[in-house]
Image 1 (tube, rainbow, N blue to C red):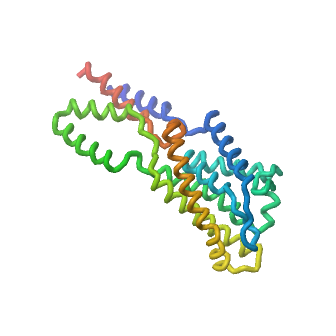
Image 2: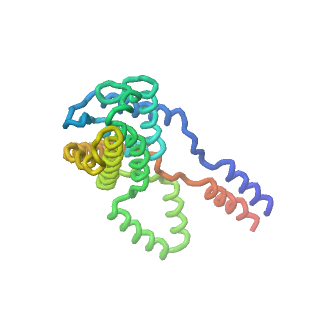
Image 3: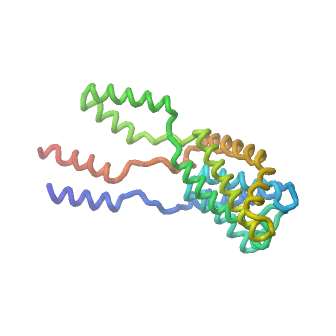
Amino acid sequence: MYKTRVTLLCMSRTQAPSRRIGAADIAVIAAFAALIIVLGGVTVPVGSAGVPIVLQNMGVAMAGMILGRRRGGLAVLLFLAVGFLGVPNMAGWTPALTAVAGPTVGYIVGYAVIGFVVGALCDLAPRRPAGVRLCLFYTSRWVLETGPTASSMTRRAEEHTPRPPSTNLAWFTAAGAVGVAISYFCGAVGLTLRTDVDFWSAFVSNGAFLPGDIAKTVVAALVSTAVLRAVPDLDRGRRPRSARTESREDATADTAPAV
């Protein structure tokens, strides 16, 4: 009996789900990095500071919303890395390496932060609407009161059923708004370092971009939720059954005849 439990414990440690990035993840990361580069072709100069209106910040937000913290952040880092190698990846088809010396350096740094922060916030989005959760709560209470057999069957069915991707539009929009705030903060710091403008004046100057950024945030949330509904495999926030849970069920099944 003791040896069986030790063996199952060792198996649970060796069979734990891997967090390594596979070939499919690398392909998705590269695809979103390319998408962000393509969005750099749309640029509209605004104001005297030399900071244009671009669609790349929408692509950065979408990478975090769809891919999550890890893969979305890596997609943005890959997008920036190829620019530092000389590839024209920024707005107006200029490499990120040359843009570092300009007034937009803060926004470039903000891209790297936004990819991870927006992805992390979207990873925390609720998986089911509030009405569905309330219905499941009362249903589970009824099942628990019915008997242990029904409760066990329901628990096993829920464990084997993959959780649907998070498609909470309001949550994604709020995460994108946080990304916009980070972009404004980092951009203001960059403008302060590269120009004679003080921080508060540089931060307020972002007001010219606010209506467009609100629209881009909403569009990014709409597109991201639609993509996750159409391709749920892109969502890696689902928690698969752990190997420890499986080992406990196997242990119960193996020891039941002996008892």
